[in-house]
Image 1 (cartoon, rainbow, N blue to C red):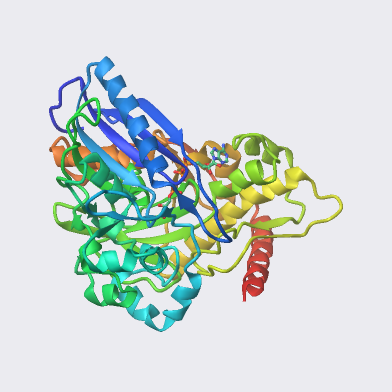
Image 2 (cartoon, rainbow, N blue to C red):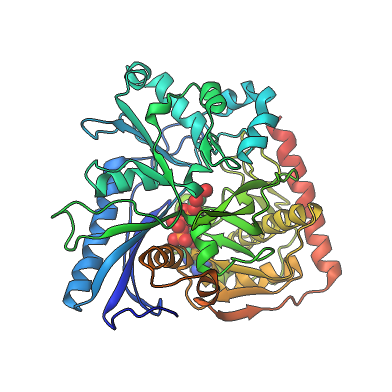
Length: 499
Ligand SMILES: Nc1ncnc2c1ncn2[C@@H]1O[C@H](COP(=O)(O)OP(=O)(O)O)[C@@H](O)[C@H]1O
Ligand SMILES: O=P(O)(O)OC[C@H](O)CO
């Protein structure tokens, strides 16, 4: 890696994910030195609603960051730069003066605004043309509107310049700088439905459409930029916040997907497959999203994205909802024991279907249950469903002329080798797992190092995380096609039920 950092030099990455917060220290070779992780509660107050408590979210970040910096001090590491990466689209609204949130964080998975989005459907084409996004409750703008419409006094306070809006990165920057900096980066802004991804500005017509005052919005910066300093005394060391990106974009960087055509899929709570499309900002019209991959030194790269709302969350459902497994990792041994899926198909549309269907009102289904169906069959079929959904995303990419030859994977689920093999079999393409599976945090650390001047170009980003294992496709075409045909029928039936 280029640059001349001291041997005791390290970068801190905060990865604020949907279900847990992590703080990871990387050395100057971008090897992991220390990890702290803390889960925090999710709240489901109504059908399709998903919320998080802002204070619980913040405390989880503060705890892990403090632990990592204490470890850095004990190891006499010099840490000056912090990168932040985060669950995207989730929104918070808080008081400019007191910093107090007016409502819980409304999480990206939340579907409470589906009727509102439907009512705006005649604007879908113009929204997509500017933002690259669908008119779907997934994105931030309708969630902000919901708070302004439903929290007493919020609309009036917003109109009087008393409220601020932020995605999770913005909220963390605000908290870490104790209210000095209200900023975001282009990747997070690109997920709000308020940001024009071609002009790289908040869009007045979109603000008018969602009726959101301009004064609530943060300043938008490049991914490697000066986002301020952590407040004195808040953490064991004072750091410059130097890199920010949404978690899926950070994972692209951590996977070295910096050349056009390279693609990665991250399997955390959801699954998000992004292909780098270079500086081409043409809007994709194949059921996928067009989004900002990163802006570095003022140059913006774009990505086409397929978003699956439920991936690892389905494994959590097997564990917590059905009690079929004790821990997520048990799903691997169980799936390996079952010789075939026995005709069972699980469609885990718990919070609607994302790309390429965009059906927020769809709900999950299981097809093909017989008297012989076992708990193990359900576990296997659930893992299979995530592979089939990935297949649908890559098919949509192919129909738009993007045909990746290899899929780089990461996220909590890819520890599961049965899953990785079945994915390769389903895609009929090699699946590559990298050495550092914490690609999201690695991406944030690389952005911080870039801003610090310790790495200078995209080549450094592309070589930081080589392959650890490649899973080669190994299944007959006839079997793969049979399973995929059954899956397509099950999705069709699920969509019919949603109408
Ligand atoms: N061995 C495994 N097999 C299948 N799923 C797993 C395994 N280990 C973790 N998971 C799933 O991965 C998810 C956690 O991944 P992570 O990348 O930390 O998610 P997030 O960033 O969304 O919080 C959980 O939903 C969990 O169910
Ligand atoms: O928490 P993850 O890793 O599932 O990522 C959430 C995404 O950013 C939502 O768009």
